[in-house]
Amino acid sequence: MGYGDIMRVATTGASMKTAQQDRLGYSGVKASHTMAETDQGRMKKYKSIISSVGGKYGIDPAIIAAIISRESRAGNALHDGWGDYDASREAYNAWGLMQVDVNPRGGGHTAHGAWDSEEHLCQGTEILIYFIQRISNKFPDWSKEQQLKGAIAAYNMGDKNVRTQEHMDVGTTGGDYSSDVVARAQWYKTKFFKS
Image 1 (cartoon, one colour):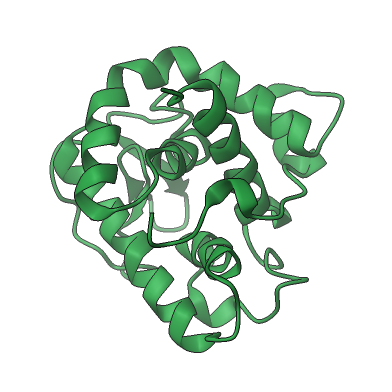
Image 2: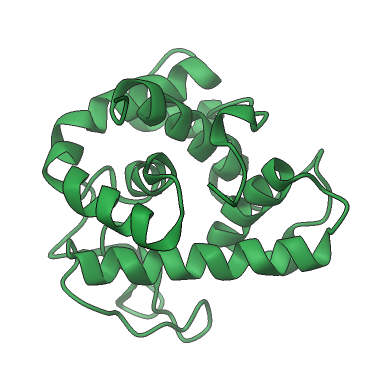
């Protein structure tokens, strides 16, 4: 894949805050792997469209699956396809498995397709690729793997907040977004999408 090898991306995994979603008594890569495995059963119904979208865009399907796991727990955390309820606006901020940000003060995207459709996964993947390009331009001296991790962080909080490799997740949800997604992707690559 032209965007770097997910297996070569450094990661510390999930923070304790993220691990608490599943009432885990531990954090780190082990917690990320546990959560990815928990979502595996629900993820199976999307495996073929994830693989199709990954092939279409040249993105490792394991990364798409990991974002789906982190964002919506493979659909389990959604309400009729919507997530991230904002009480101040009395509206949801995000749509679909990959939680595309539809908040006008956030990403401001228009939702494409049904929440669990290939069209939706294409939109989410296009947003990720947009951020890969932005981070690659912003940090041309970073390796492909570092740029990929930065883009994953940007998927959560925008590229302006990605400043250093050491503090990539500062300001992301749970303070661990890219590290958790990378660890989940590594699990999906070796356990779910293995040949």
